Length: 250
Image (cartoon, rainbow, N blue to C red; front, side, top):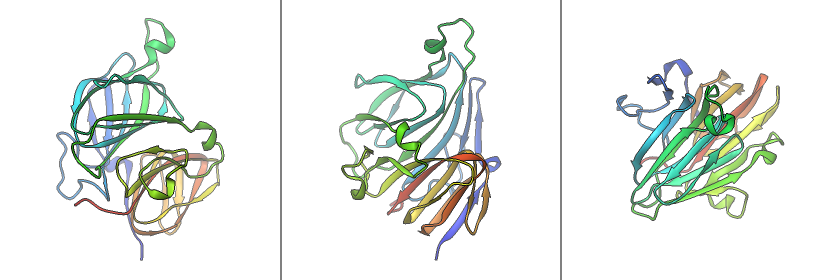
């Protein structure tokens, strides 16, 4: 039988640094709760807004699969392996930190506007899952999925699950996890995956999870022993991020 824990947007840890407004679904940085360090294989789900002309300067990561999904604006990525580019809505990105990588992420508004006044923040969700193996070679991959999202279906955008092999999804180095995104019109319904762990995050809009109730923007549901519960978008539609996971933290 499924179990559902709802975590409301206002209950999240938050970091405010002037240039950054960040909400953390799990323990992160200076925020630590031993009872809230992850769910399934997902250990970070950060909902970030970065002011124009600013961003995260070069910093290290190690042994983590990092998936970035932009909701609005543009985010410039550069790393020590020579990868660089702008991530925008509809373009999924995966960075495998492996044995060690340095990267930076900055708001792209200055490149978009070319103006002195930087007026456009970038809003994105960054998610980290534990990899199958440590010490692998760092890697980077991105994929445009905007056209597929117009169907209103759950679209696999970053996955290591065998069932997604050969599909238009970024491969992550975790065989027991996969991320879906759906952009739903008002009243549209999708069935969530069946899995031991399913994490539903409402990035935009609202959605009603059958048997649980309405989830507003920033709310999340942690579903154990999930059995394909329907989720239905509210009157303004919804953009939802859904992790299907077949293992937990070891």
